[in-house]
Amino acid sequence: MSARQQDGSVVSAPRDGSRIRVTCAGPAHGGEMVARYDGRVIFVSGALPGEDVTIEIIENKKSFSRGHVIDIHAAHPKRGEHVCPAAAAGAGCCSWDSAAVSLQREMKAQIVEDLLHRLGAVQDIPWRGKVSALSDNDTLTATQWRVRQRLSITSGGDVGVRAAHSHEVIPQHCSQVVPLLFGSPDQWGIADDVAALAGTNSELVLAADSYGERHIIALTHNEDRHRASRRARVTSRRARIQQVHHRQVLGGSGIARERVLGREWYLPAESFWQAHHDAATTYATLVRDCADLDTGEVAWDLYGGCGVFAHALSLATPYPGPIVSVDVAGPAVAAGKAAFCSDGPDVSIVESAVGRWLQGNIAPQYQAPATVVLDPPRAGAGRDVISAIAVHAPRTVLHFGCDAAAFARDIKLWKDNGYTLAALQIFDGFPNTPHMECFALLRRLL
Image (cartoon, rainbow, N blue to C red; front, top):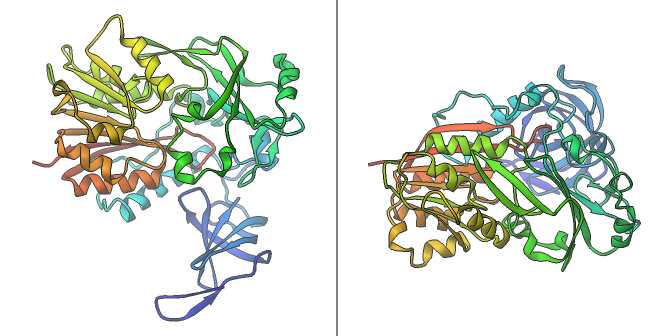
């Protein structure tokens, strides 16, 4: 396979399985490093910036190749040993765990800046150039932060996380999870239950809630989730429970009790919740502090789950106006309705796909929003949703994104619809991985 360069020259791809020596440059979106070999772009997994490595070619495309590190000849000074046993055994959970936390955040900042320049058409980025930690512990080892974990069950009854780019299950402990979720089916007293689920397209969901209770749920799915399209997977993270054929509570009550900014939610432990133990409160506080609301003004919380950001919006002014939260995931919506049913502000929780709700007949009391918060799934909000929101001309938009490329594309769409990026903050919401949480405050241009 070969590719033609801009100058007309043809660059041949190295053969699959061949081994070549390259020097890596900076990071690319997704966590690989960028290298060049005879002018051809190579994306390298397992490397860090500036490293001199031998790699094995594992994939060839028309304009680039992929390879993984076989040997490191000159290591980055901030490279250390693996801190995650599962990642050391080949799991895809903590692909950056051999890099110092400070280096991880430098790389994430570089990725965001590059994507905002290239995809977001933002030249002057309004931020301090640093990725923020979500907790003091993250500054040290970036471990023990995850309060939700999904474990695959093999046909032989083993449980673990999946290998990188594979359905193979690695039966090793992932260092991301909080200590409450450490252990094994034997230690949790559910070994027989898990053995009975072998070969049934099932998984375990572990949750540690705000009050220190551990919940273990077995979910058996209707179909092979791994054959779904990428967009179907990334847009259904909050609605995943709707694909479940059977639910079995193996530990705890199965109902997670969560508390954020003084309000409680009771929701199925497998429902969407922020993965990092400090994320929900940190992001809700940010929404409360950045919401531009005067007395009685309308606010929207789109892709709102159980309404945590709707609650934050209600705290932004002493006398809030009507607030509506919209999400497609039924269990989360039900939890949100229960949380606001007996007291508090004028918050309405609506079960609907966001795009469908925007194209429908929005109730008069929810029209003309002053502030809109949206936290779309990994694929981003997209052109149709952003254009539909812009028609209502909110003066302030608070936009979250857990995929930096999709986030940058959404920022470009906001610019095309008359908004400017006023502030940016990036959180290390997924330490020891190349993923991050992006937040933009956008203002409508008059």
